[in-house]
Image 1 (tube, rainbow, N blue to C red):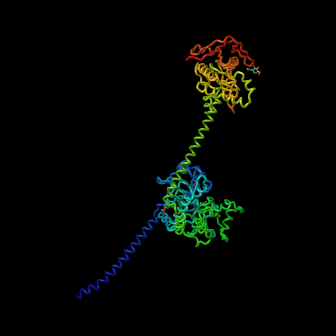
Image 2 (cartoon, helix red, strand yellow):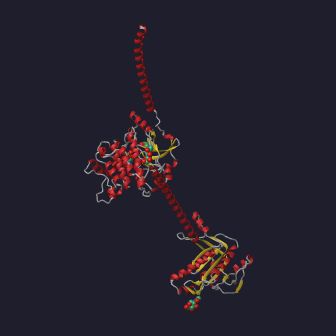
Image 3 (cartoon, rainbow, N blue to C red):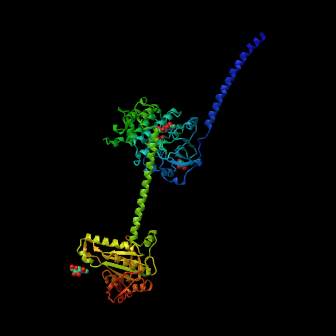
Amino acid sequence: MVILTDYNHSVFPIIGVSMVIIAIIALVAHFVSKKIKFEVDLGDLWWQIKWDDLVFPERQLGKRSTLSLGISEASFRKSAASVASPISMASTTGTLKNISGVLVAMHKGVRVAVKVVPVKKFSINRALLMELKQMRETLHENLSRFVGLCTEEPNRAIITELCLRGSLRDLLENEAIQLDWVFKYAMITDIAEGMGYLHSSPIQFHGNLNSSNCIINERFTVKITDYGIREFRKQIDRMEDFNPRKFFWKAPEHLRERDPFNTGSQKGDVYSYAIILQEIITRSGPFESMERLGRKRAHMEPDEILDRIRMGMVPPFRPEVSADEAPRELIRLMHAAWHENPDSRPDFATIKPILKRITKGTSSRNLFDNLLSRMEQYTNNLERMVEEKTESLMEEKKKTEELLYQLLPQFVAEELKKGSQVYPEAFDAVTIFFSDIVGFTNISAESTPLQVVDLLNYLYTTFDNVIEKYDCYKVETIGDAYMVASGLPIRNGNDHVREICRMALELRNSMRNAKVPHDPEKTLMVRIGIHSGPCAAGVVGLKMPKYCLFGDTVNTASRMESHGEPLKIHISKATRDIIEQFFRSFIIVPRGEIEIKVSAIQISENFNHNSRLITFSHINTL
Ligand SMILES: *[C@@H]1O[C@H](CO)[C@@H](O)[C@H](O)[C@H]1NC(C)=O
Ligand SMILES: *[C@@H]1O[C@H](CO)[C@@H](O)[C@H](O)[C@H]1NC(C)=O
Ligand SMILES: *[C@@H]1O[C@H](CO)[C@@H](O)[C@H](O)[C@H]1NC(C)=O
Ligand SMILES: *[C@@H]1O[C@H](CO)[C@@H](O)[C@H](O)[C@H]1NC(C)=O
């Protein structure tokens, strides 16, 4: 018993002590292993991206940036198409610029945004490693995902998630996009969500929140970018693209600091948020609102504006938004958020319920569907616009071509369009047709000029409709004279005679009962002459190119017409010979011998003014 008691007395303290020791050792081991894990995590170079791993599409080199992720100055002047069409956004990107270019690249099969930053001397310290670890842990739908850093000389870049629709700034400036309150609320809420999360994360604050740092993805969710890794951002050389406008989003208390670029606070972010609210409400840049409202106020330079903010005037100098531009509560929220005293500004935890109250009625599900359908509609609109433009362009092109084909034979026009020269050509056998109106001089003397135009218009329309059906080419019209040729510029054997004769018959028949439109008492009578023979043709003139025929055949054909009789078709012996040889379906009636007067210009050795002339006045029987 005694021994046992003794034993107990001596053993229990030993067990107690050793248990305490074991517990301490376990605790230490736990912390050490946690610490080791932390250090290993810290040492993990997951964020390091090799420049060579980034695949840049060939075509983006040399093109101007249409993507903006908060840094590009060019983002201030954005074309409508760049934000509007996802295709153009995806395919065009910036030049490889060190200062302010954002490039699109493929990294491990994922498209990323590469923002090249001017960092002279890059150094890694423990603080930066801690920040990088934070970045990895900061994931939110309304924050753009951080992919990594490229730290190789000379290409130092921040690589982030790609958002195809550019920045909020671009969207607001793009007048082609209609923004209603549902859409505006959605953007305002997105930013508040993202900022709220950022403020509750170890990153704590943004510091450089502005409307070009709010980027928009293909589903029109706003994401905040350019946050965190402040140790890295400190190393960026800011002087290279210094612009006072960049400070418009900085809260007054930070503007008064020595290095406003690298300062920030949660309340400072709230101030920046208020400036963004102003941009969304008014769709104008910060502090542009005074001009927009037409206030008589001297134009102020950005530096002057910043001075006034820094001074902390009473009342504080802020952008102007008139009361009717937004719901009262939203304006009140904006005023509270840019309060001169940081402590009076609400934080995002307070802002979110206020927003919920303001946007009450548009449930978020509703809102998103609404948004999506609107955007689809918008995209469709755009597509239709492009289609219409293309269509009207094609139409214009067709019209121009048609006009060209009327001025020139199609074959010649096409040659000219291809840029090849059209040389004058001699044709062995063509048939030429002339027609005019009997007594046209008297008719036109009795009519007003407009009536004459009407008459000719009626006549030519009828003729044009007929000749379209035949292999022939309308050479020209002079007054009431109408000249058509067949067998050129594309030769057609002997068919030219048949084509012209058939056409002449149809024309004559179509004019059989024609009346003068403004004087139905009078009949319109055509006179037609046809001749076949050799001829030269070519394009004359550069400004108004014209396909002209030369040679006696033309003159003789013209004579045939002027010596013809009303409503009859007068053909020459040469034409008749071909008809008799090849096309027996026509009925020809001899007319007898007629003396054809030939004026001095028309004389030539080939011209046989004693040729026997025939008229045929009957319909052919085929
Ligand atoms: C960045 O600038 C350095 C010189 O300052 C130059 O050698 C390098 O090619 C530039 N990088 C890019 C991507 O333009
Ligand atoms: C991002 O913002 C939208 C709109 O405010 C919200 O519906 C969504 O829940 C937010 N994302 C997260 C993860 O909270
Ligand atoms: C917004 O802030 C970024 C820094 O995060 C800056 O590079 C950019 O120029 C700013 N945008 C405007 C429009 O000032
Ligand atoms: C034209 O009118 C004049 C006088 O009015 C007349 O002598 C002449 O015969 C007319 N010509 C024709 C072709 O009708």
